[in-house]
Image 1 (tube, rainbow, N blue to C red):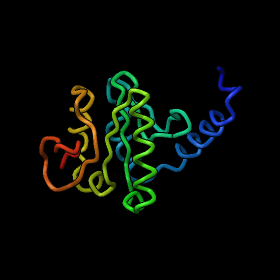
Image 2: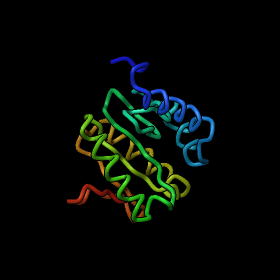
Image 3: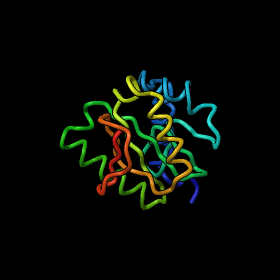
Image 4: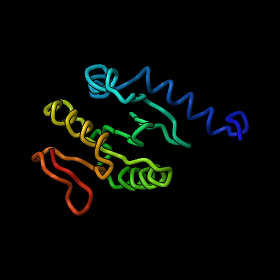
Length: 142
């Protein structure tokens, strides 16, 4: 079915375009200082189904999301879980970083993205305690 026959697809494309023009400071930093020239290629603010992801590397089926504080409110955590479940059903692995990790531990975030591109087992929410291997829940600490 072409995107002309799916009204949500054109809405997602318009929303993605708007988000590309209004990136957060952390999204701009990760994009311009790492992902933009990274190979394999990443794309920013791309629609996948009805969702728009922050960054996606199609060749490694990897989505990278940057989360501000609002993502830790109960309603938003449920939405993120639903979104991650959908993306996983489409074959994507989802990495989530908090904005302060991009601000304070940029090199570690880049290292973990690089590892995830090359290691198909890495996925989950990442936090800023220490750089370690994934926990049984799929969380990795920076």
